[in-house]
Length: 262
Image 1 (cartoon, rainbow, N blue to C red):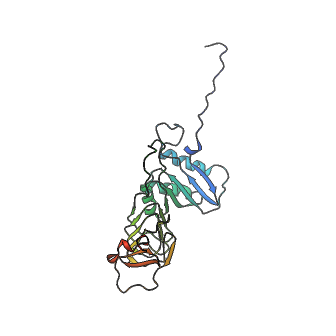
Image 2: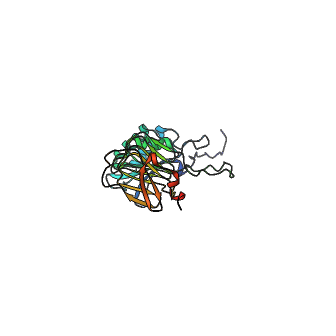
Image 3: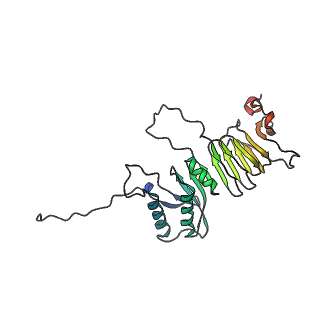
């Protein structure tokens, strides 16, 4: 034993808030923030496995005084974390235990967006944050890759995507699809759609049965036809100098778009 040696105190390494599950309010919205996917260089004390993340979530929800009202809606900020339907359900169940409802999922991963939409949640997919390690001379992508959904967008559900959205199913009344590019509905369109949400007037909306409640393309807005046609056929909605027009898809020519007119 070394004489006059002072005992050493072990201290736990500090963990960045960005590597922890957080619950906060912002602009009156209750938000659940998940840490990013684990990298080999991250602190071992951060939630690195799904089991650890769920345990950390339960601790956060049950620790201290509850600052939310019963049945308050929660927006899940998933960012780049890959989540499947089972994991989303685990989060929803944990929130329900403390009288919270998972309502909307924000993500930069297409797989997570598809899983959340399939589970019936409102979805907002953001473009991924570019890596600082990438070549600064690389050309940025103008639009995100298309989002394909094999489902019916039901009443109360909202899908947001920075690129084109393709729905293999219906968009029901009360359902909403907002896209930075085109919107293609391989079924009945009876809800609200907004194509070219970033201001692109060249965007179009196509549906096998066009019966929308409200159509928007860039800044242009139009209500759906008040009467249904005697016979349905694929139709396309697009912007002309006179506003939004709806015509047969078989007769559509890109020269009819706003940018192709005098």
